[in-house]
Image: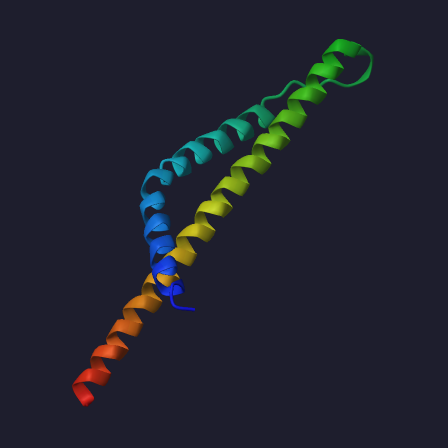
Amino acid sequence: MPGLERLRKGLIAVARSCLQPLLATIPFCLFLLLDIYWKYEHMPICEGPVCSTAEHTKHAKSMMKSQRNTVLVLSALLLYWLLYCTTHMLVQIDRLNQQVKQLQRHSD
C-alpha cells in the first residue's frame, strides 16, 4: 500500500520523540522500587494475639498496595524498554536500507 511507508516513518518519529521525556520515569521507578523494598524490610510483624483486627487489616492493605505498586513499576519499566528496543531496531533497519540503496546506486 502506498501510504504505509510515510505512516511507519511518522510512527517512528513520534516514538523517538516520546522516548526522551519518558526517560524521566526510569529514576522515578527505581526510587519507588527502593521505597517498596525499604517498607517491606522494615514493616512491623503483625501476627498472633498481639495484633488487633484493625492492625491486621492495615497491614494487609499495606502489603497489597506494595505489591500493586511493584507490578505497576515493573510494567512501566518493561514498556519503556520495549518501546526503546523496537524504535532502535526500526531506526537501524532504516539506516541499513539507505546504505543498501546507496550501494546499489554506486554499483550501477
